[in-house]
Amino acid sequence: MSTVLGIDIGTQNVKAVLYDIDTQQCSAVASAPLALHQTKTGIAEQEAQWWIDGLHAAVNQLEPNLRGRVVAIGVSGQQHGFVPINRQGQPLAPVKLWCDTSTTAECDYLMTQFGGSGACLSELGNLILPGYTASKLLWFRNTLPDLYAQMDCILLPHDYINFYLTGTKSMEAGDSSGTGFMDVRARQWSEKMLRVIDPQVDLRDKLPDIKTSATPIGTLLPNIAQKLGLPPGTPVAPGGGDNMMSAIGTGNIRSGVITMSLGTSGTIYSYADKPVVDEDGSIAAFCSSSGGWLPLICTMNCTVGTELMRNLFDTDIVAFEATLQASTRGAEGILTVPFFNGERTPNIPAAKACLFGLDSQNMHQSNFLRATVEGVTFSLRAGLELLIEQGLKPEEIVLTGGGANSPTWRQTVADVCNMPVTILQNQESAAFGAALQALASESGEALGDLTAKHIKTDVDACRKPQQTSVDFYTEHYQAYQKAAAHVEDLYR
Image 1 (cartoon, rainbow, N blue to C red):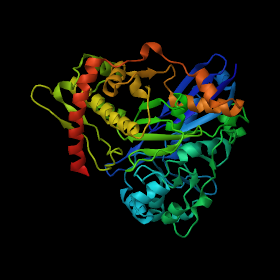
Image 2 (image 1 turned 135 degrees about the vertical axis):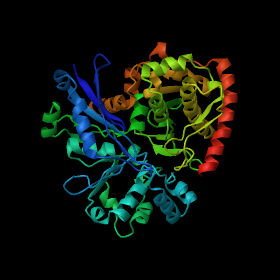
Image 3 (image 1 turned 180 degrees about the horizontal axis):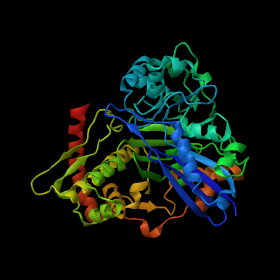
């Protein structure tokens, strides 16, 4: 039996999935937690070494005999993180992450110097948002000039893991499209934006070429193979950003499918055969890792909100689900606008979460938990509406991420969005997508054929919208929109 290994470098943990090609089943899944340095000033950082340690911890949990059957490896990683390395391949600073909002001033500078939002959308396809890599690179140049002078190469999180595994510096179109210095239409680095970041240095010399094929970027180094208990010389696929790999892992490589990820952040995206750039830049006009484009809405707060509420009430996952099931739809009037970590859609980095509708009768634990789930889901519905306005025609929502493990949350998504919700047997969609890309890279088989063959639906877990709840949430969503508008005015 042969297996492929999918690795996902997330914000909260590193996951490793072994997928058996012959039985079409995941033979093993392991994970290792990651620390996160986060401050009230918007800083969110991790050390790249933590990813390496987590990678070893996760992979070494897998049975040695299963690891010995690996024929290909694929890596998924959190998008936008900035990993500057020197000539010796060592990271020069802690990695600023996708959720770091401390570089808002740098974003404003880049947008202004480039010619404004219209020029960014016209020439890049994207605005320069605080989470993106571009402002982090400018911050590094301005704040740590001595270290900046030592920078030999710019990588993203999954690229750094690929480099660790193979010794090859490589980048691919999907993950690269989230940097803010790539022309997503042409799939090329933007010389103009890179010149704005540094007029003296041609930063294209610090960036690998953008890879658009699924052929392996290299093979597993012998010393790394020995440490991980994997066959030396195993081919490593290009991999990609977590959203791009999750798109593959959920079969979102054709029109009509919407993937909604209930992870640390909330994301909702769909495949498109041409770039999707809206007039105000609310949609991230990313490239896919399957040859097309991946218009995406990202909200900064999804399970972040529910985890904060669970911690507030000291509620474990089992009790959380039981409480949701017993709670009242609409949380007895409580509305949560869940901007706990600021927000990207709408773009309000300084935003805070707010609760509306509290009274002496509804202040119960169940209502706070329910209102948070509903508020997060409302924010994602707003994103879905933006995608539909651009002509996308979704037929189903494939739900993934940790929140998808909640039956109540699944039904809430179906009712709020008035759309069937599909749940897949393999819920580790990013790592699974990386494994499928690795299989395509190793076998040469078309990715569309592989996803059709290997992605399986969990029929019993799927949900259909219930009309009574759909009608209720249609009205409740309008109230949420008013509340969210007030929060936007307050923190804009």
